[in-house]
Amino acid sequence: MKYDYLIVGAGLFGCVFSHEMKQAGKSCLVIEKRDHIAGNIYTKEQHGIQVHMYGAHIFHTSDREVWDYVNALADFNNYINSPVAVYKGELYNLPFNMNTFHALFGVNTPKEAKQVIAEQIKEAGVTNPQNLEQQAISLAGTTVYEKLVKGYTEKQWGRDCRELPPFIIKRLPLRYTYDNNYFNDRYQGIPVGGYTQIAEKLLADIPVRLGTEYKAFLTETEDTFDKVLYTGMIDEFFEYCYGQLEYRSLRFESEYLPDEDNFQGNAVVNYTEREVPYTRIIEHKHFEFGKGEGTVITREYPAAFTRGNEPYYPVNDEKNGALYRKYEVLAKEQGNILFGGRLGQYKYYDMDKVIRAALDMAAAEKER
Image 1 (cartoon, helix red, strand yellow):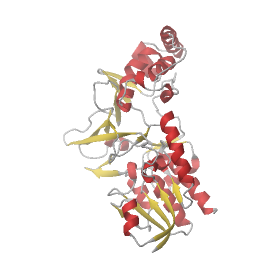
Image 2 (cartoon, helix red, strand yellow; image 1 turned 45 degrees about the horizontal axis):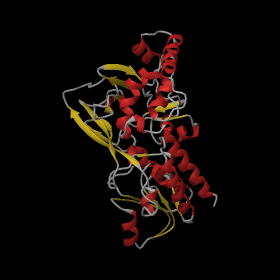
Image 3 (tube, rainbow, N blue to C red; image 1 turned 60 degrees about the vertical axis):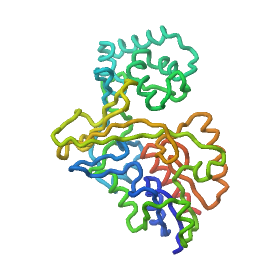
Image 4 (cartoon, helix red, strand yellow; image 1 turned 180 degrees about the vertical axis):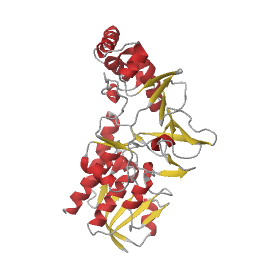
């Protein structure tokens, strides 16, 4: 077979791009190294509950075109992300807002909260932050940092906050309202019935080969392709010729509790103590307002990345940024190979930004 496009990776970027090119009359073949489509937004029904197999995914956007795009593929509910943080048995609302400050300081008004935080910042005396700890304290004071930032961040990155660069926390949003909505975006929700259906609809009538590695596939196939969209790790594509980019990985432990109807009362509960090995517990049924028998919970553990693990988070510091730019130069020299998604572009994307980037790339391709 001769195809116009080979799409490497059946994650959200690859699915959207494939769909758009198919709509434009182009022939596409999708290959995916995993045994399922949908990438990290993959959901699977277990005991009547849609389980987010690779961590919590809450769709949110201010891009009306993207919102309309996903709503044509699934019905979205009105779920609002309002996580809770646990620190040594104390409960706090996230994001940092007046409910948080009332629990931390006993204050009732924005003026009182601002005064407490300003006094802590002044007392800390940080004028030129040299690490993440100093940066966080200079933005939010010592109490917020010690109880809600320090342990969680150290677990996520696997390093002491004093060893992390300040730009990782460029800002800490402090909201002086009693509003627990984590996102500021206008549109938010969860697809009723999970995310996998979105990938299925995007890939309808497009051939997909699962369990297929790109380099091995090229040596085995007699198919030909005018162009390739590669959504895997860009450093791996170039066989690490400049060195390996850094990533952070995750490990998930899921548990079905048949006799438990409601384990934690919220979809997402963060654990901010360094001594607690996981960063959060997800209770999946709350994404769809309590549907399903019993409950399924997932503990999420940050992990060091080694080759063979799933690279969830690019480590976008100065060193890795410089290394990526070298690979980016190589990528632009390829001519008939496009690089997309969080791994192909070494950039952390929210779901709406993935869709927007894929739509923009597809639009550019249609004009060629």
